[in-house]
Amino acid sequence: MSDTNITTLPNGLRIVTRRMPSLHSATLGVWVNAGGRDERAEQNGIAHFLEHMAFKGTATRTALQIAEEIEDVGGYINAYTSRDTTAYYARVLAPDTSLALDVISDILLNPSFDEREIEVERGVILQEIGQALDTPDDIVFDWLQEAAYPDQAIGRTILGPAERVSQFGRPDLARFVTEHYGPGQMILAAAGAVDHDTIVRQAEASLGKLPAREALGRDGASWQGSEIRRVKNLEQAHFTLAFEGPGYLSPQFHAAQIWTVAMGGGMSSRLFQKIREERGLCYTIFAQSGFHDDTGMMTVYAGTAGEDLPELAQLTVDELKRSVDSLSDAEIARAKAQLKAGMLMGLESSSGQAERIARSLSIWGRVPEPAESAARIDAVTRQDIAEYAAALIARRPAMALYGPVEGAPTLDRLSERLAA
Image (tube, rainbow, N blue to C red; front, side):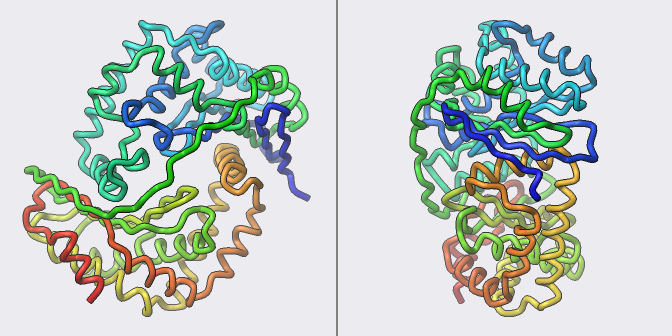
């Protein structure tokens, strides 16, 4: 019998919990289906700014009181913003779950958006933007996203440009909440030492008062595949190459995961072995997959010396192309084992469970049991992976380069090499 329970309140708020009997703590939070993708161009960065303001005071609590109430009981409170989601969550001991829900609800229902706190947090975010710009293996991924989806919300940076952040005020924050923080866009998730009925009753008394309203539509993604090259005198050249993959709802979702892990998911992966271990062309190289409802991205990253970048780029596309018909049964089995183990290890914490049940309910409208997910991974065949890989590399990729990259091959040249 599943320990996962789901309740939908009349206003559309969904509540999902998973009891973990062996734990004495719980993670509880609200996942809002609104993030960077939901911003208009003039709003770029507002979702992240709003997340920062979550802990800066409400009508009933100061910023210090929010921190003190959670930390007085030994708890932890945090938030994050992605392109699809903004999450506000806390981890506390079992007796303090009601307190955590009260604080999270207060943050969402009664933000003060104090003008002085807005100015303080603006400075913090501008520092964060500056830090990202000074971190080459961070900022290059923002440029890659822009190269893949130019002139679209999904292609813009989550932090937003400094000139936009410098202008946001209280009305901008309030407008984004009004547009995107309806109860139908929220999922209250809790995992660990929790009681579903107790959480539902408390949520009804607080978040249940939010009036139902229709969500604004989200623009679909349109992969373009272009190149961004920033030449700078750095110690390393940072190379990223991306292909459009499937979204969460695609039947190729699990094949995409397996192929990506086999290509660059660990020390035994193709790219690591061929390019780092055999050729010594880099210290770091990996592949990763990212997914949205309607699109996805398979990304390769490597950092190397400028003079080695041409060879590294060419070997990378050669290995991607060769993988279509050369992945062995052992490589596929190893990738499947890594995926399943990673999933199960991540579910040993209440935070991992809360994240999973919230995101699963948002994406699929239900929460698959881990055994079901593992079975779907196991069901993927070698032919499924070959067909996925062949279709993937047939599409035009996107590329972002940063550092001493003058000698790197162009995206057109790499595309021709893939097609040859």
